[in-house]
Image 1: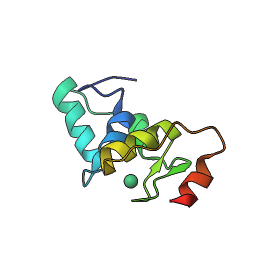
Image 2: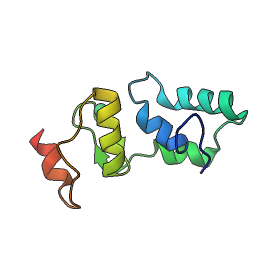
Image 3: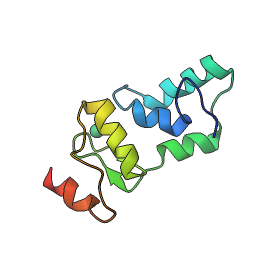
Image 4: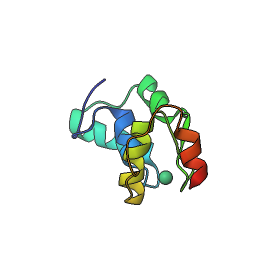
Length: 96
Ligand SMILES: [Zn+2]
């Protein structure tokens, strides 16, 4: 994990920039600007591989409920009503 520009890592940056047209390209550029290094293949894969969480608004896939929360907030300006219990995920998304 290599933090840059206030993000935990590349995947974190991608998760928080889903409003960008190409979050991966943006974050790769940003990481290169701030650290002089391009993200590793592994980091890109981690950031772009589909996760089990789906955004009900734009259908982005996120790897964890926490990332979905962050995505909802940053990409759509919404907060989920409260932290969710494990297993609650699908119900909540269907309810949207
Ligand atoms: Zn979304």
